Length: 399
Ligand code: SAJ
Image 1 (cartoon, rainbow, N blue to C red):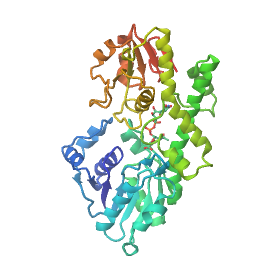
Image 2 (image 1 turned 180 degrees about the vertical axis):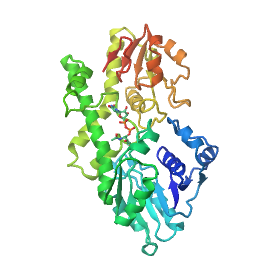
Image 3 (image 1 turned 60 degrees about the vertical axis):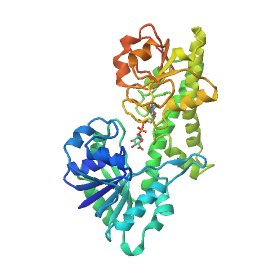
Image 4 (image 1 turned 45 degrees about the horizontal axis):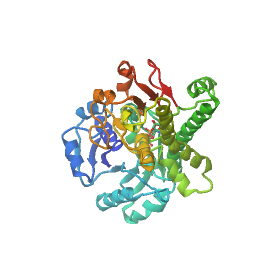
């Protein structure tokens, strides 16, 4: 069995390496020649726990064009169109078109990229010529950045296919590394479940964020309220924070809002609450500045630019959202630092932790990277706003 994985980002690359580690002949393809050159040198283009180890223990070939294979796994990005809130399926469609050009008859094409329910019917089926008998499937990825390797092995998977034999072919392939339960269903159900999983998490986080605002008004500590409520066996509220980022949770619920306007009401409200959090953080910062007679934003430093802790991904990050809010208020001069972001993405970005800390009076923790948890003792004398509630050894102001 020969497999071609197309799109070598956060999902495609680890999947390729995992197949290869389990003795499946797997070839990686990406249009980006610079990326392919990096990968050929056995370096990953993103930082992820254990990926280097996996990399050095496998041997796969990389190409910029699809190759002949029995099974294709498509892991390309699926952005959403901001104005319509609908999915932009063009990358998936382009990948499928290039597969169709070269694949043998009876090949299986499994799409792992998150797609809105109905995308395969609406945008992909018409690209498949009848005479080749290509089998389509949707096998949505479920792995969490920061713990990708472990979750690839342990998480349950869903395979959505048109017929049993395609599903069984894929079950055999994925069982080579996946030890979790593999559930077989139809394509559209698989598409919907993936989006629903991320939407559920978005709504749960929005609930925590709304509770933050309510508890603030009521003079209560939201973390204590959530901790105690979660002692109920059927309650599991997630943690409030400065907003929801990343390319998944902050994007996928919009697919349902875009496709079902008027029906997706809780989903829309949750998106709005989560999107309001960076502005809420700014209000907090402003209150703290006033209370401490600090008028210059240059005395305020925001720690963390990535969308969450211990990853280097900055897509849709709460800090980037907060910078957009600042621009609207014409607020300038704040400093930014992130140990995972080594190139300049923001003006005011500082690259040395000690310089960053010594140049500010107020530190706003936007991301709970391990680094800041380990360096709490260096923050004495600073006013610290901890939007993630991770610093337990020093006095902080929480949300
Ligand atoms: N966040 C909070 N409070 C929480 C948990 C998360 O504010 O209690 C924030 C994070 O800081 C981050 C955002 O939410 O900004 C999203 O982070 P995340 O860790 O919840 O999720 P992702 O986006 O890294 O990964 C999600 C996962 N989906 C679910 O858990 C349902 C992962 O399993 C999916 O594979 C991934 O989306 C994806 O690619 O779809």
